[in-house]
Length: 180
Image (tube, rainbow, N blue to C red; front, top):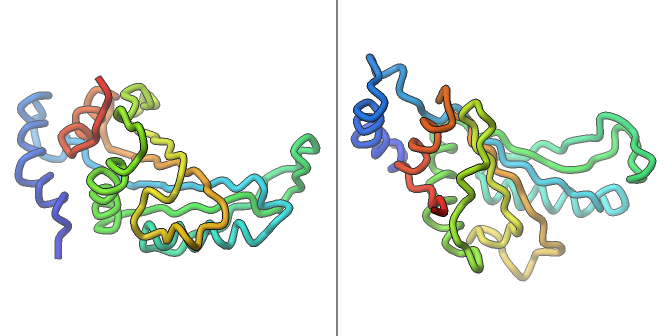
């Protein structure tokens, strides 16, 4: 079964983007290539249970098993040794990617306290957008009573757009609530 947002992208958004930017064929129209969700757990060096818990919560949120990330090099100021677990991440593609984006925009972001919209300046000049979320409890899959520590997460939406303007329009058409 095709995700509902993918259906909307194919039926409405592709045509709007084609008209606005004057693409010659449908393969030029930007789309999502992947979504990367990353949780950094700095205190995980002292308490490895925090990283396990963050990985479990990330798996609940995304519907895919999280990969634990390790430090690439030692940094003495942070009391960090090479190879220590410092976070976890998930790379979403295909149907899971579209379903996660749908839940992020329509369920999770409206639950953020004092939310004024996503920053329209968080693009990287290559058409990718990164959204920082301060607490994982905005997702309904996370049980608030079982949360040991509130952690933030980064959601990077990688698109096939060549410019930030194209990517911004793609995300706006798919429901990202940018602040004006």
